[in-house]
Image (cartoon, rainbow, N blue to C red; front, side, top):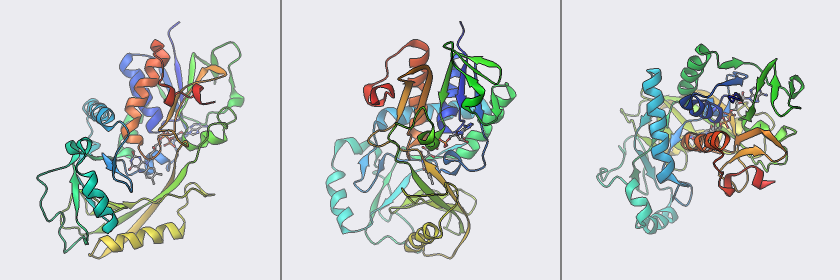
Length: 350
Ligand SMILES: Cc1cc2nc3c(=O)[nH]c(=O)nc-3n(C[C@H](O)[C@H](O)[C@H](O)COP(=O)(O)OP(=O)(O)OC[C@H]3O[C@@H](n4cnc5c(N)ncnc54)[C@H](O)[C@@H]3O)c2cc1C
C-alpha cells in the first residue's frame, strides 16, 4: 500500500519532515492550528557554530550545517523567496574569565574552520557597540527568517492540498486496525511534531521534557549599517531595515506560553543597554516555548507501543540547524526501515 502520512504540527519540525516526504514523492497531510505565535514563528532563527558559556562547537555542526544550508537554499529556489541570510556572528567576550577560556579554546583544531581569520582587529564600531573584552568573528553562520520560511512553505503545500488548518484531537481519530483514520481520511502513519505541548499528550507524557520559555524584543535603532549578528551573551540581530531583534531569555518555570513577563523584557533591555551605545526604541516583544528534552539533542522515531505513531521533537534552541537532518533520518526510518541511532531513538528512551 502506498504510505500516506499525517503530520501533526507544522513548525520547523513538521515542515522539514513534509519537505523530506515531498522530495521522495510520498503523499502527506500537515494539520496545524496556524497560531500566530509558536516557538518556530518567534525564533530568531540563528545558526551558529560556537555557542554557550563555554564557547564549544555545536553538536555535529560539521554534518548538520551543510545539510541545513542545502535544504534551505533548495527551498528558496523552489519557492522563489529568500529566507536564509548567511552573515558572520561577532562574538564579544563578556568578562576576563571568558577571555581566558577563549584563549585556550581558540587553539583547538575543531573550531578553526569557523573562525574568520581576516576579521578586522577592531571587531565592532566602538562608538556604537560596547566591547571592553574583545572577541572573535564566527563564519559559516547566519539566520533563517523562520516566519517567512514557514509561511512560504505553508502556501505551497496548501496549494497542493496537503496543508490543513485544524486542531488534531485523538477523539476524532481511530487507529484500531493498524492504520489511522482522522476526519474520515486514512493514513498509514501519524507523526507528532507538536513541540513542547507533547509533554501534556497522553502518548508522550513519559518523555522527559524540560522546555524553556523564551522572549525576544523587537527594537528600532540606528546601528550604523551593521549587518552581522552581535553576541555578547545575548544577541542582537539586525534585520536589514533598521529593526533589530534582541534576545533571548531562558525561563524554565512558566504559566503562560506566549505572554512576555515584564521581568523578562526588563532583563533583555538591561543587556541591550550594556551593548548598544545608541538610542533605541522597543516596539514589541514575543514569547514562545522551546521544546527541550532532558539530556537529549532531540528524539525521533516510532512510539514504543504504537508502531503507526511516530514523533519528532526536542529541537531545543537549535531547530533551524537540526530539523533538516533529523527529518531526513526519520523519513529514511519510516520509508526504508533505516535504523535510528540509539541516542536519538524515541523507542529506546522509554
Ligand atoms: C524565544 C526563542 C528563540 C529561539 N531562537 C532560536 C534560534 O535563534 N535558532 C534556532 O534554531 N532555534 C531557536 N529557537 C528554537 C526553535 O524555535 C525550536 O527549536 C523550534 O521552533 C521547534 O519547532 P517544533 O516544530 O518542534 O515546535 P513548534 O514550533 O512549537 O511547532 C509545533 C506546531 O504544532 C502545532 N500544534 C500543536 N498541537 C497541535 C494540535 N493538536 N493540532 C494541530 N496543530 C498542533 C502548533 O500550533 C505549532 O505550529 C527559539 C525559540 C524561542 C522560543
